[in-house]
Image (cartoon, rainbow, N blue to C red; front, side, top):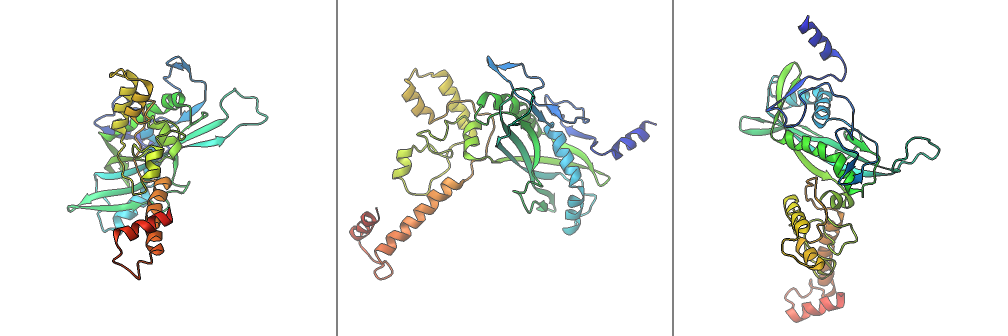
Amino acid sequence: LHALRTAEKALLPGYHPFEWLPPLKNVSSNTEVGIINGLSGLVQSVDEYPVDTISKRFRYDVALVSTLKDMEEDILEGLKAHELDDYLSGPFTVVIKESCDGMGDVSEKHGCGPVVPEKAVRFSFTIMTIGVHHNKDNVRIFEESKPNSELCCKPLCLMLADESDHETLTAILSPLIAEREAMKGSELMLELGGILRTFKFVFRGTGYDEKLVREVEGLEASGSVYICTLCDSTRLEASQNIVLHSITRSHKENLERYEMWRSNRHHESVDELRDRVKGVSAKPFIETLPSIDALHCDIGNAAEFYKIFQLEIGEVFKNPNASKEERKRWQSTLD
């Protein structure tokens, strides 16, 4: 009877039994979890700050399992396409792109519901690639062809909050991030195509715009003198240095700088302390992948075009062996 009930349950839509090895730290082993209240487990105020919002979310691991089950056919077809045994148990490596963005004004003009902020924030993920190690090679059996499409972007958490509200964002997203951190050190055991398979997850926080990167990495807002989310450049330094910039900031360094900012162990003035921490002023709580964004692409392109214009002014194609003085003259003409 028990086996029959289990088989019956497995046929129900949305029910997918799974297991983590080792079990996830501080995460329930119950697999029958639907939509949960994003505020569950939170006190009504965080550090004297009232959390007055509405939030709904899925448990991170349950959402990943549900997505993998939806992709069952794609995974089995990928194995066949690469002439791999469809009973291969893995471990499969799944690369996840995480995204979070404000959804703007979502106010209901004539509603009579609770008074909540009129803005919403959505945290979502996309399965980018699935690979498996076979004969000393890593074979990619699935790759998302339209990674920016809303069809493959799975919502994980929705909250009625302003994306600039650091405290509310931290309170609601922290449990989700704790689940993600727990999954990094465990393997998922899930039945796909009638065979128990093992999955490992790699998370990449690349779906954030500059405003949200500053918010979740604890940096000052975009009007800050520290213009860059990738390096320590100030506006003045950036305007004088028109060469390609390098990525030097990291989540770990931002956390260390926040501790310096919080403790001020060197007993410095506000300006000295701000210069030491390079614009970190709140606790970073989500690790984003520092990748080149539109601003830095523009800086890089500007540097390249600057060189090209300089060479065009000097008609370098006529005189490739121009002296330093001549090249400086071209530069001052361009400036």
